Image 1: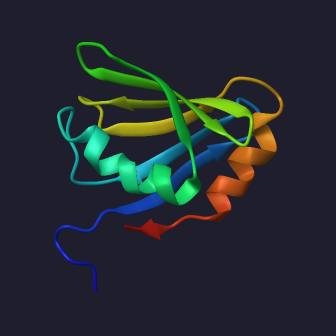
Image 2: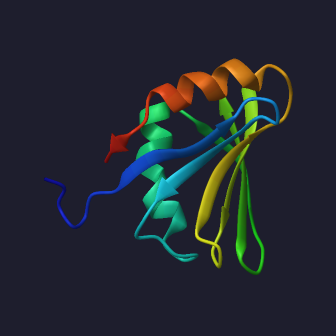
Length: 104
């Protein structure tokens, strides 16, 4: 059973045509986003290259073994997702989706 301080990351939707990987994550808000996703970034070995925060949107440029993607989180909709920036990200998205669910 999960403890109250543990976070479960699940695949909400994977669309390899775009490519986008939507995550199902509960228990986060705009201010806690960085702390909530830190264990997932570590588990997936994603390196954060840049971070930007707007009114209700986090946009982080991340790297996985040379493949760059955007990690986005929108506070009001409660959505967290990865967006691929090029065709190289398609197999990476598929690989990461296969690693879910992850409890950290």
